[in-house]
Image (tube, rainbow, N blue to C red; front, side, top):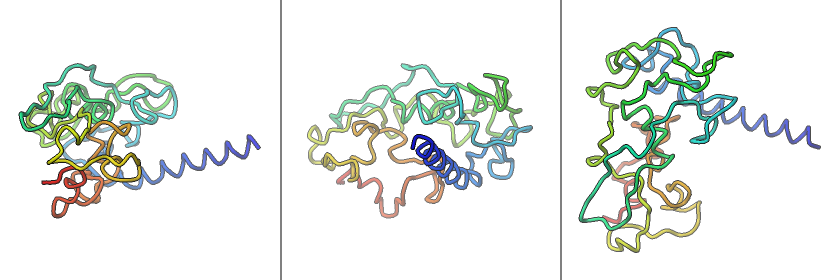
Amino acid sequence: MKYRKSIICLVSVLAVATVAWAGVKDTKHNFASATSSPNAYFSGTTQPCVFCHTAHNAGSEAPLWNHENTAPPLYDVYGSNSIDMTIQQPHQGSLICLSCHDGTIAINSLSNLPGPSGAGNYGFPAGAALDGLGRLTATSSAFIGTDLSNDHPVGIIYDATKDPTGFVNKTGSSLSYPDKLLQDGIYVECSSCHNPHDDTYTNFLIESNTGSALCQRCHTK
């Protein structure tokens, strides 16, 4: 019985990995391809998944996480007199994105390189969006930096009762909006609106924002 369960688990993991690979290989997150990501790629590389994931000795920030991370607290967070919800430093659902997009860490700086080499840099940076160390440059459209004060806020403890006229109330169900968008059912993070494996809706949005539909999952205005 244990053997059968192990096989089922392995098949499930491989199925998820196959779906992720099928989605990411033709997007700008395929840093192993000069065709998919002409402005930010690494020569001498063949494995797009390894830039974020490893099968062994993974970090806890995300499933099978393989990328070096920015150590918080580092960011200047959003502030506004029009929102009363608590805004903290970003949590995991944002930190995994910012570990590349804040420009402080090389995209190819990994905990585990392919093979037995351990931590290090995978490949050699190429493309106009990268500097010589493999970091996103400030001129890149993908660069966010460490000043998050002029971006959609992340690290928010979502509580519509503090802003009752502007936000949708939580339902208590992880299958319903806005709860299903929140990290741990609590926080608004990058992962609330973006899926790094799928660019179907452009900008790696999790669903269509036609008519501001995605925005209105949380906002009532």
